[in-house]
Image 1 (tube, helix red, strand yellow):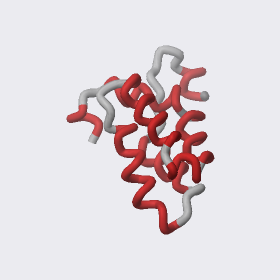
Image 2: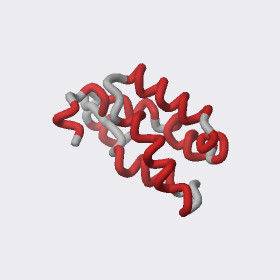
Image 3: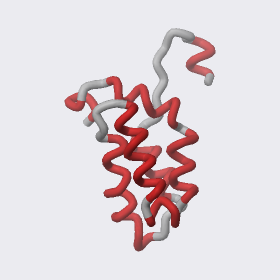
Length: 93
């Protein structure tokens, strides 16, 4: 918010790694690898629409139903996450 207040034309995005880590706070240790794999289609999607579809698929899955707070972490940060998807895949790494 401070960056946007100082530079109103700036593009602010959430770090994907930090977003994944924030979502994992709500996931049991034994399920973390499976949840990380299930979330990968969200942040590797070609565009925001495909990412939203992937998040919806995760939310409807057994893991998504088991960890609704992990889904809420992504939905709560969605506006800050989607600028990431505007960059080509070569730059996302």
